[in-house]
Length: 184
Image 1 (cartoon, rainbow, N blue to C red):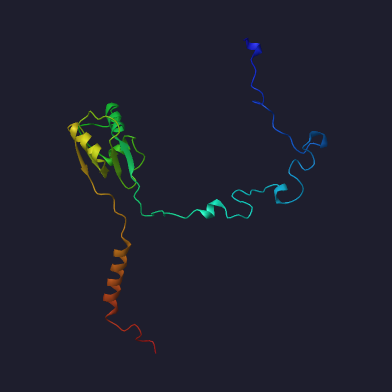
Image 2: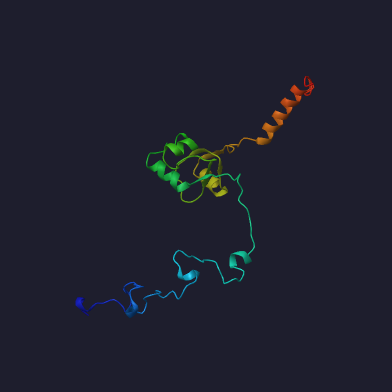
């Protein structure tokens, strides 16, 4: 075989079919779409339509819901923390807080808290203060001679307590006078 004998397999690089270019081409006039009807027009997309048969997306049951109160934690692996210590971005002697992880560029922002996972090796003795950690991560940190303190996650404002406070305030103020008094 020589370089000048190399060629593509048949149809590997076939040019696109140019439709609507005269009757001699075989795909002229109606451009292989047939006569009239919705599918002959441009801009038609019948994805999911099965000819009147109940479509698959309606035959399958609905399921689940999205919890709007879900907590969004930033996940950090031990290997990433170790790498930051090795690069000098984190000081192993200091307590490593969530803000320290942001400042070191390990995470973008704290969101609802930081959760440490046990992927990778940890050799440095670290004192961490984060929202949560997996059991394996806690064991790995303690095995390396470090400690971990889990701070509670940031609480969202409790709407029920606000309403209860408003009701209590309005009850206390409303007992002094009759609300209908003076309207005669």
